Image 1 (cartoon, rainbow, N blue to C red):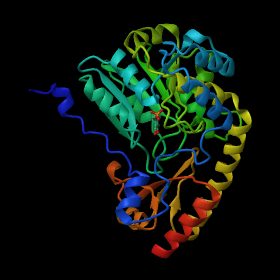
Image 2: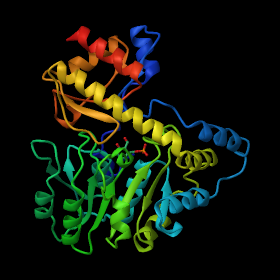
Image 3: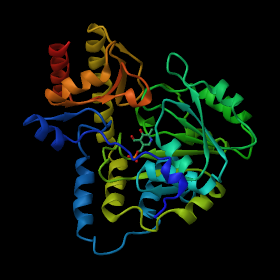
Length: 360
Ligand SMILES: Cc1ncc(COP(=O)(O)O)c(C=O)c1O
């Protein structure tokens, strides 16, 4: 049977190695994954209890519109519940927005290297990915992005902070950019890591939305809220922007356990503060240790760091596997000497640095 021609262009997603796989392959008892930007603290205890309770009701279909979660989000961000759409992870929300808006031949603009889902979702719809390289210091070139807008541009993705580089765009630059974008082009801010941004007065996509800009902000519970295994993402935008997306989304994208866990996670402010403090301190620790080893660490506004190891990142990745550490080489983005390392607990980070010292 013939495939749809758009599917032929898409490579299957290659996930990072799993802990179990590495344990077996290298005969190790302990393996640490510092590759997928997960929260090493595990889910908040309040969320755990809510999820355990929700399990008892899994014979019943969940609430299609995840109202309990949308209400908490609306309260937290001071928006209306009908300005929020939920999905099975931010990945799912990205796919919904592209499916809702991109016709064959429409252009979707974004900077690279970045999160690969913008490209794959666009190709699937027969759209044309238009990629603008990041500047040499791995920051966004919004000026060049603006130059690339044509009559065919439909969506613009700004991954902020950017994965894999951890960089952010100055919020005033984003605001000026959005002001100049034609009204029939939707700017989508992927803010999967925004909770980690530690810049006083930084304006997020939600702030810009509330000021009246037509932006769609996508967020996730996978990183800061420590629920990657549960799959909860959402987007905030105008009712008009969300309308076609609501027609497309799966009826029961968020299961009962996911809704319960997400609601309690966002309410557990103390958990968030503890994680933020740990991430801030540990990011500094790992950055300093790596710098002392001669690596170049780029300033990160996330829970991972992007590092020029000054040697082949894939070779290093393989040597680290033998020692029980999984990191993310960036060769897939065309950056052979670069790696992305998630911030772990202090114990994990210390052991990781010791292993790296042995190798180097
Ligand atoms: C920038 C960015 N957007 C979206 C996602 C997808 O998040 P989720 O786990 O909610 O699908 C990720 C996950 O790594 C990401 O880094």
